[in-house]
Length: 240
Image: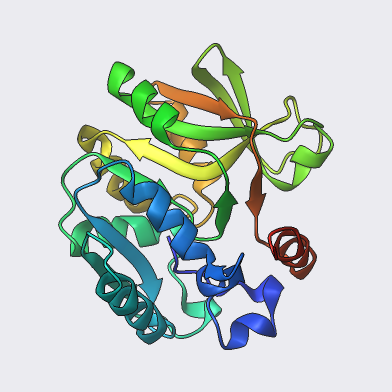
């Protein structure tokens, strides 16, 4: 998912989309795509917007010409400004339709920076064939206020709260989701029912009421590159 305009990172993101900002000498997206490719996925599709489409095409062309072993497809929403954006869930639904996606689907937010392998997530998904999300233990529930908070019992997700005032858990959603192909139509159902088209957390709240959802907890480093301060912190930490 690379369709946002990252207004909290302006003025940097007036000119460069957040997933292409560098960390450790490489774009954030490079780290994500290499991690995803290591799972043996069949297709990689970037969902972006019309404004930054050219930059992602340039990045994808260079990535593939440098020996990356998979084709990178790009689907762009017809939006040039954040006021025109579809929102994350509507954007996913749009991409599923445009790219004719009909297989199990791994979705990763393009502003994620993480150091863990996704193999554990895939293994849990293969066992259960349920929607499965990667969850990060942020340690302090007070810090969880800024994120989507996950309530789990064993490996089952029992509840979800989007940026709650009083979090019931220190477990937060990372923006990494695995969906079986049988559930891809749920995105269209959710959007057509008039639900909030943006924050994925609201979709998860809705889905938990209809389907079993599993979670895999990670305790390794994970960052949501959402503000200039967070970006600077991560950039400096990985400078060397």
